[in-house]
Amino acid sequence: MPKPKNKASKPGKVEASASPPQAPPSWPAFKPPLPVIDLAPEPHPLTSKVVLIPSFFPRSLCRDYVAFLKTLPLQTTPGRPKRGEAVRVNDRFQVDSQDFATRLWEQTGLKEALLQGDVEEKWGGEPVGLSPNIRIYRYSKGQFFDCHYDDSNNLTLPLDPPMPVKTTWTLLLYLTSTAEGCIGGETVFYPRDRRSQREEIAVPLDTGMLLLHKHGDDCLLVISLLPLSLPHTGHGSQNFDHQLTITFSFSMKGEKSLQARNGSSGLIFV
View (cartoon, rainbow, N blue to C red):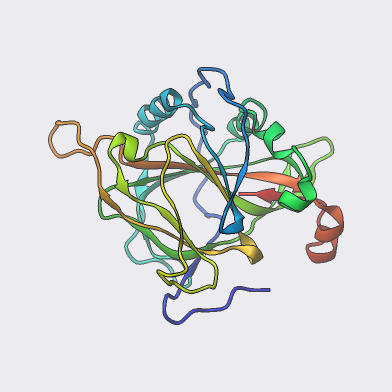
């Protein structure tokens, strides 16, 4: 069922970007080897549509990635979005990187963590891999991502044989938090398709935490609040780490439900 339009908040959609393709960067190695602890997905106590995995990246690796991401050509989003798109003011970098997606899936413990227990009940199918679409979001003081729904995407995983899939979950990896001096910037969800302070489900930043939330038809209304303050290096007026997030996706089998609804043979988390 399509999400209802809310006249008060006028949430937009976040769809696959049509940006021109560019070469993937040389992503840093995972040092120390991952995982550093046993990964245990934790459903949020207020909704099963949000799941948290603490310490997915150790703080030392987050620092390495923060330093690396500063070298990438992040671009500030335009102040006026296209019709129907969500209002956002942040810096972003997007690239298709199958190699990095494979590393995140196979070399971090994520695959094993998501395959534990009743995968049908937890995820709606069997996880099989990650989408190659990687997005980096950086928020400076005063930047934000207004009310929106994350849309689903159709793609084909390069398996043997290739597998058509549809994305159904968003994964956010937080590289900075209050531990680095970032105040504010929480991701907030609204279960009733309206922005209400009494109903909001706020997830504070936690360095190295992986946040998973459903998207597409089952997406909650979501907003990334603006950071209230950020640390400084002492070098002029440049912010130190900003608020940095890596966004990616993973895939699942769900043949019966997918064939009935989508006509495809798998699905994905984005």
